[in-house]
Length: 61
Image (tube, rainbow, N blue to C red; front, top):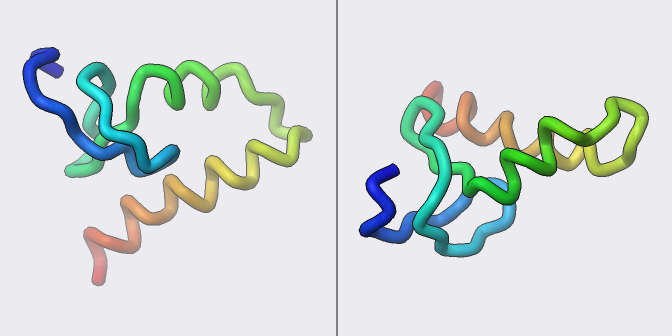
């Protein structure tokens, strides 16, 4: 991101400046870092999977 505009994170729902865009959805740096360090056995992993599915569902609606 260019660090100038804020976008709403598809994971946490907060408006942030720094992050990545996957397809057309924004994921903030904090959520990205937490996702890549979350073990697949952790309950939070399933939360992340559910939120990430929204990217696919929105683009195929």
